[in-house]
Amino acid sequence: MAHVQRHPLAAQAAELLLRRIRAGEWALGHKLPGETTLAAQLGVGRSTLREAIRELSGKGVLESRQGAGVFVTALDVAEDWDAILRRADIVAVIEARLAIEAESAALAAARRTPADLRALWRALAVRAEATGSVEELVDADTAFHRAVVTAAHNDILTGMFDAFIPRSRHAMVDMLRIRPLTDARADHHAHEVLLDAVRRRDAAAAASASRVHLTSLRDAFA
Image 1 (cartoon, one colour):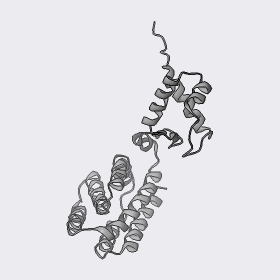
Image 2 (cartoon, helix red, strand yellow; image 1 turned 90 degrees about the vertical axis):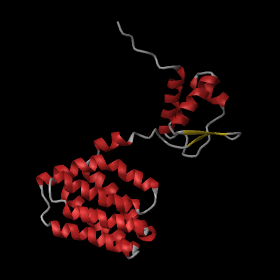
Image 3 (cartoon, helix red, strand yellow; image 1 turned 180 degrees about the horizontal axis):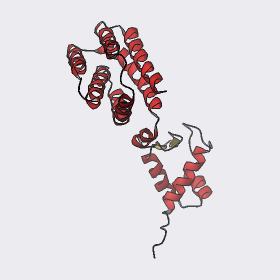
Image 4 (cartoon, helix red, strand yellow; image 1 turned 180 degrees about the vertical axis):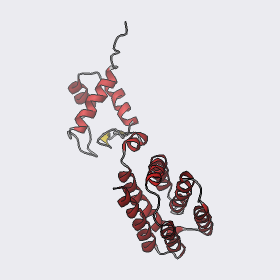
């Protein structure tokens, strides 16, 4: 007969600490009580407490600073991106893309290189020629938007955009099967306007073009 395994004491202590942090006992950036005090409060030894702190440090919730103590660096364990995106409504995904892509477009206008422009022109040309399957159009569209984000030269923004691709692609394919584009020419023109703003180094116009395009996309889903 299988028995329920007990969590090790350190894991239980880590969970208790996390509950107290979630409950607001210590604010972000706040220093935890000393080892002796905290170990007594949790009813564990100091070595167990240290292990619990190491566990929460590995999850980004706590940080041990040499000679200064242990500080709260997050108010909860960060959930896995994939799990969040699997649950996310497509409108929420597009709203997040709006935040990422409008800023990326502005940065791209300021930072783009001749190589970035060539990549954008190529991606736009491929998008114009994507007249086959819905999947082909969505992939070509995604490649263009990614080229804009890449031209911002910010690895964090690129990584965030890449995290959205699987969820966004699935939803876009579904939407276009149910509701094909009513005016493919106008949709493509919106991308030309964005590229032209990036080419002209007009950050405000690039951000606006990105925002207008994605807002209309979001409204079509809503």
